[in-house]
Each structure stands twice: as C-alpha cells, then as structure tokens.
Image 1: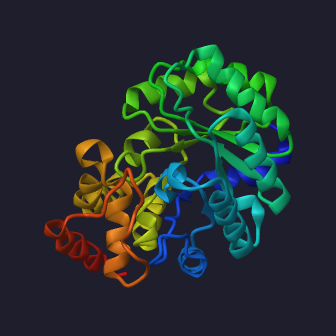
Image 2: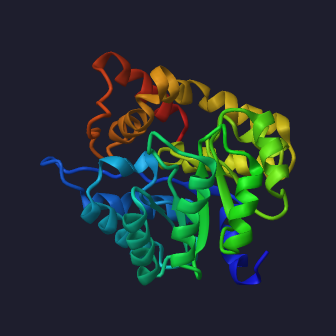
Length: 302
C-alpha cells in the first residue's frame, strides 16, 4: 500500500456512481443536463463518480465527448480525488485519456476491460502496465470482467505498478471473486463489486468494501441505504434493499444486459430529469415496459 493513495482508496470504499450521459434532442451530449445530474448525486451524499463508465455509454461516445464528460464531472465535483475517470480502447488512446484526466485534477482512472477478441493473460498485464506506468501519480483501477484471469496476474501488475490501488470486479461469481481477491492480495487492493447492488451483499461477504451503481442516478438514497447496511454488517437490512431494487435490476440485466443503460435513462425520463434516448447499439425501452419502470422509480420516494 502506498500512503500517497490513501484518499483515493477511501473514495473507492463506498458507492461508486456511474453517471449516465444525457443527450439533447439533436443527439449531442447535453452539458447542462449532465451537470444537473451530477449535482443531484453530489447533493444526495454521493462522493465518488466514474464519468465514462459503461452506464455512461463509454463505447458510444466520441473522444471529444469523453473528454467533455470528464471535464464536466471534475468541474462539478470540485475535488478530483473522488473522480474515477473511465479510460480504454488502444493503449495510446487510454494513456492520452488518463493524462487528460490528470491535467483536469482527477486522481484516479478506471481502465475498461479490453474488448479485443484475443486477450492473453500476460497481454492483459502488459496493457494495464503501459497505462499505469504513463501516469504513476494516478490511482489505477482495472475493470475485471474476464473470468479466466487469475488473481496472480493482478499481483504481478501491482508489483510493477504500485499505483494499481483497487479493482472493479465484475465476474458474476462470488466464489470466483473470493478466490481471485485472495490470490491477488485481499488487503493489498480496494475491492469494488462491479456488478452493482444485486451482487453487493455476496461480494461484501467475500471482501468487497465498495460497489458500483447505475441505479444511483435514479435513487441515490436507495444505494446509500445499501452501503450503510453492508458497512454495519446488517445482512437482513441489505437484503431488504436488494428486494426493493430486484425488479429494476432484472429489467436491466435481461437479454444479456441489453437494456442496462436504457432502463436507467427511462427512469430518469419518467422523473423529468433527462431524455430517454440512448445510442446504438443500445435502444430505447419499448412503450409496453415504460410504465413499469416509471412505477418503480416513483415507488422509491425519491
């Protein structure tokens, strides 16, 4: 552990919000609406934000739009130590994005799981090492979705790059997570449950201390209720929240998570907070399902 990163490590041990990226009627990013959504999160008590995450439609944004979203987030948040900017694609693009985040004042970046069809274990290490080495003063958080990656590879990466401080783990297998974390070094990293509230209780039981959330865009208090219960070790209370959000998250996860972002934006649209439009390959929710999403959002007493 490096004391330089204590603030960043603490920021990861909580609700890590993934803001949506709202679009204007002409399809461009809507900066004023984005600011208002981020401000709503901050005012509700959410302190850690990941612009350019998957719920933010990272892969559907242009490089210029990704920079804009990062800039707006840091400006609105004020304290860059709690902003975890998503970076990815090829190594030069990821490095340029990380350096841009650093210039803005952000002090952490999340490296998206490589989407290249041919990913070797050693190549995974090399990819992350190239990014981490380019910005040694930034905290690095790999986004792990690869169920074939062993924890020993993460330890290898951190041996070379001590600024690798946390992991967003998003393999839907709590037993695999428990083994991975212990093989990598349970106390060495901050473990963030990367599959959000539905998996948070089981992942916390295995060592996670934070979780990501897209639902938090809609109902910050619900996510905060869950983290409070988990920190208190109150499994019954955490599962009560789990039951409260179950249907919403099932709708997001259906059909291979095809509507992951769509359902969140639909809920926000039902509350008059942003437009429902998403970019291909996502698609707006069918009319037949919109009323159910609106009813769920209204029922959270936001």
